Each structure stands twice: as C-alpha cells, then as structure tokens.
Image 1: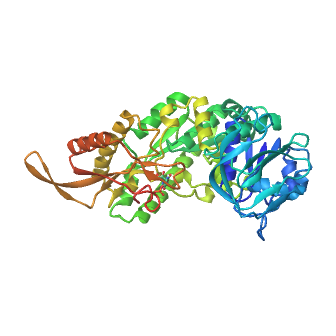
Image 2: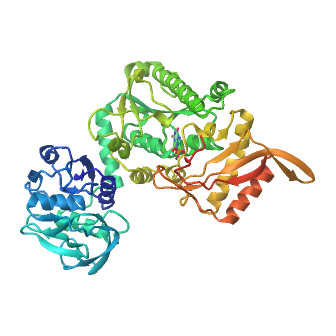
Image 3: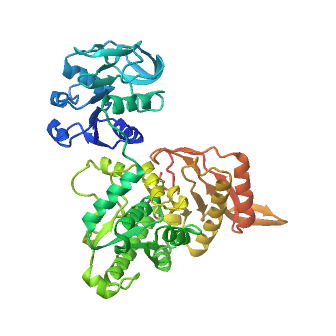
Amino acid sequence: PVLVVDFGAQYAQLIARRVREADVYSEVVPHTMSAEEMLARRPGAIILSGGPSSVYAEDAPGLDPALLDAGVPVFGMCYGFQAMVQALGGTVARTGLGEYGSTQADIHDTDSTLFKGQPSTQSVWMSHGDSVTEAPAGMRVTAATSGAPVAAFEDDERKMFGVQWHPEVMHSTFGQRVLVNFLRQGAGLEGDWTASSIVEDQVARIREEVGDARIICGLSGGVDSSVAAALVQRAVGDQLTCVFVDHGLLRAGEAEQVEKDFVEATGVDLVVVDASKQFLDALAGVSDPETKRKIIGREFIRSFEQAARDVVAGTAGQNSPQDAEQHPVRFLVQGTLYPDVVESGGGSGAANIKSHHNVGGLPEDLQFTLVEPLRDLFKDEVRQVGLELGVPESIVWRQPFPGPGLGIRIIGEVTGERLETLRAADAIARDELTEAGLDRDIWQCPVVLLADVRSVGVQGDGRTYGHPIVLRPVSSEDAMTADWSRVPYDVLSRISTRITNEVSEVNRVVLDVTSKPPGTIEWE
Ligand code: XMP
C-alpha cells in the first residue's frame, strides 16, 4: 500500500482518497506508529500529511529519519514537508510570512517529476505559519511562492519529494496531477486498485474466512449493507441469508424495492420480517425523541435476534433444519466503512461493532464473528463496487435514510395514521425532486410531519385545520455539516401544491432554511 502518515489534521483521509482516485491502494496510519512497523507493511510509497502544528511547537510530532533512509519513495505535504526538511537538515524558519488560502506558486521546472506537463504558475492552497528557507542538501528546489522561497523540492535519486501546499484539496488546481506524477513517475506505482480488483480480492478473502459456514446479514436497503451483502453473496452464494426487518417506519415502496430490485439483481436468499405491529405497539403514547430512538433500537435488535435464531434453526428462508445442524451460522456481515475504522483509531485490532443499521448496537451475546468486506473502502468506492457487482443504481445511489426511519420524522407520537400521512407527503416530495433531476445535488431531503401542530387554512369554500409538513433538503459532504439546498422555487411550488392537494391531513408546507450546525439534518 501507499501509507499516508497522519500528522493529526483532517487531511490524511482526504489524501488517501485522492491516492485511490489514482487507482492506487492507500491506508492511513497514525504518526505515532514506529518507522519499523510502517516499513514492515512494505509500503510502495509514503506520504507525510499536513498537520496542525508548527515544527517548533513543543509537542510537534516528529519524523523518524529511518523512514527516509529506507529507499521507499516519500512525498511530504505542508507539515509533512517541513518535518522532512527538519529531519534532512534544511531550515524551517519563523519568517512571519505565513500564507493561508489560495496562493500563486511559481514553478521553476516544468520538466521535474512532480510538475511535468503543468503550467509554470498554478493556484495552490496554503496553510502555514513557518516557511522553509533552505532546502536540505541534495534537494532541488522546484517552486516558490511569495511567502515560501522553498515551496517544493525533489531528489529523484533518493526519491524524495515535497510541497509546502495541500495538493489534496480542490483549490490546488493541479493538485491531483502532482499527486499522480509522484505515484507514477516518482514511485513507479501503476494503478491497479479498481472496483473489479477490489471485488476479486474481497471475494477470495471472504471465501477463505467463511469456508463452508453459513453467514447472515442484516439488510437495511441502504448502500452499505446492500453492497456488503452482494459481495458476500458473490463469494459464498447461498451460504448467505439476508434479514430485512420491516419496522413499519419505512417510506413508500421501500420494502418492495429491497425485495424486488435487490433480490432480482443478486439472487440473494432474503428473509423479510414484518415487525411493524410490534414497533407501533412499542411506540404508542411516546413523543420524546430519545425515548423513541431507544425503543426503535431495542425492538430492532429483538426482531433481528429472533430472525437470526429462526435462520439458525432453519425455520426461516430456504434452509432445512438438517442443513442448519451441519452448517451453523457463525458469521455476521457488517457494512463498516473505512472512515469508521480510521475514526475509531484503528486499522488493525478488534472490530468495533458499528451500531447495526445504525439504530443501536447489537448485543454481544449474538456470538457471531464479524465479516466486514467494506472496511477498507470509502463511500464512493463502495458505490463503484456495488455497480461492479450489478447492484441496481436505485440502491447504489440511494440517499441516506436514518435507521429509525419515519419514526423520527413525525414530531409527536407515532401512529399508523400519521405514518400514512407522512408517507404520502414524502413520496410526493421524492417524486418531484427526482423528476427535477436533483437527486445527486441534494444529499437528502427529510420530510417531516408536525403532528402536534395545527394551523388554519382554506380549501374550496371551507376552513381547514390541518398539519404542516416541513421540507428539509440539505447539501453535504459527509452529514457532519450541511447547508440547506437552494431548491428552485418552481420545484418547491409543485411539491407544495401537490402535497396540500393530495394529502388530506396537510394544509401547509414549509421549508427549513437552517444549516447544520446549528440545526441537525433530522428534526429528532
Ligand atoms: P443529523 O440529524 O444528526 O443526521 O444531522 C446526520 C445524518 O445521519 C442520519 N441519521 C441516522 N442514520 N441512524 C441512521 O442510520 C440514525 O439513528 C440516524 N440519525 C440520523 C441522518 O439522516 C443524516 O444523514
């Protein structure tokens, strides 16, 4: 792999993604990992990321020179660049000429390894207080900016490269070209990390791990669990049973979509558990959001456990009891993604159980070994793998939908009638947004029913006293922050007209124009 050494900023994951966009496999490792351990992974190249510190700060993370002596190609960026300079005997000075944001870089040599084929000035994204004033011996300086006399260097012999800026961010116009030049020309790495190689690789691994044991997967209809299931299915075929718990809080057509589209495309053995009555009963009389979430999580686990026991006993799906005895279910598929792995501080070590369907943790006494075929992948890669496996686009490009479903989009008590109202309004909003071609621009659009609020309206000749529906379209990169989407007025207008005409309980449609923070995406 290409190892991206994380010096403590948010940039390392982004760098890893950019490397993979160049079809080269990469992993993030913490800077606290020893050089020995890093080299033991036999990296094809090492990238030193940016970081928040000054190399002069007391607790500045250091760079072990052994990493630079190993003959592995190294590329330092921003803080990583300065750490390299310090380790190799150049000078990092507090010039007071820090640069933040977009800056023009003068490229001295457009024939150099990093800058070959690029213009002699380019916009680069800077974020540094200290500057390199003297390159280490043997390094050829290849670029400068007004605040950084040594803004880039390279040593082709020793295969060492560095830039003061952040090539991984979009604002660095030729950033990806610089990175690709490093990977291909600097490190001699060909691009062979592709969706089809990932599938091939994972299929082999899953086969080896699972053998002829049986394996179950909780399917939510979302992208991650669907693609994970499809991968496992490709690997071990009908040893896999998928369990889909219909908690009655789904949107219109959702259960059918999973049943039809997914099964049709993959031929997977699917058990659908209709638990809607159980959930509705448990939610009766409850309007506090956290209480609702806890109840939904608890009931979900109960249903899943029951279904898992049925699968084990051979009473669910197509497995006979005899079959169950000979091949017990020993494995559970989880759709854990790479960012979850990195964020939980790991890469290696024990699996942290991600909340199942994200509606609450699975109890530990389920006693399955986890199979997590997506734990090396970013979301966009999961989508590519899904397409490669023939998972329908309607699932691959699905917008996020929370595990607790419509249960947290009815503000107030959840009842069957209210669910029907919300489902109808939601279907119209989704329909019109899709029709307007906005599905990929919008991250997601919760539709919320204010069930305890009524307002006066007029329809035909009569007074109405109905409920408001809130539209919450947001744009986002990762759901951590979000902005409200500027959906064209005519689309909003069509949604509003249709909902108030077609959904009898609703006489008003309002738009949520709050960013996150301070608002969250969901209302509960
Ligand atoms: P918030 O409301 O926290 O939501 O801004 C951020 C993202 O997470 C989704 N979400 C959930 N997803 N289980 C899930 O699987 C949950 O309990 C849950 N709560 C929120 C939300 O739809 C948004 O994409």
